[in-house]
Image 1 (cartoon, chains in turn cyan, orange):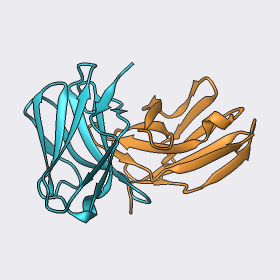
Image 2 (cartoon, rainbow over the protein chains, first blue to last red):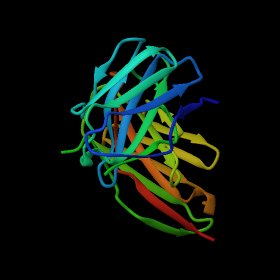
Image 3 (cartoon, rainbow over the protein chains, first blue to last red):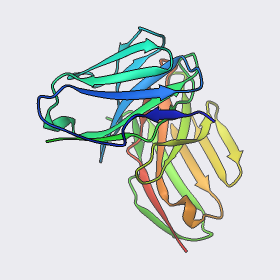
Image 4 (cartoon, rainbow over the protein chains, first blue to last red):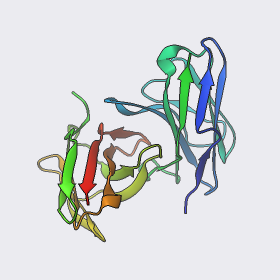
Length: 113
Length: 110
């Protein structure tokens, strides 16, 4: 079974802080993704990576950056957290190619106060 | 217009009933479709993956794709209380990105 592990289930941070969300997958997947999930808006793609050190913007990249130094690890960075970034953050991974099903972790519920 | 529209629900059905979930999509390029199940406080879990028109079965689950009508459906037969969850449809375009519906919450009453 694919295992995508997100380092924190719940996180509380303050406005202006730099926040790091970590994700690790154990299936040697080439592709990794970061989404946020908000009620009524569904899942929205923030960034994705199809190879180590490669990154592509998704639909809502503003206020975020990512880092992928190793194949199994993909980090999401909130440069200066704001209250409108309070959300559920989901990491996913998939095999090489642009049409593979994505497998998700259990999410990090982030609150910015 | 959103790329994928999902019937909002919520749905409440008695145990043993057939659950019918529906989505429509707006793009006609080559594409593939998925259904995910998401339990409360958990991540989405892949249920079905298909890229062709017609039906695909997996146990009590059937995914149906009608590309002429741009309609995708998920049917759950003999529903169980453990099927109570939010179901998400998703559409991909061979560019790594998925477009998700907003989700339908299903409750199966024992």
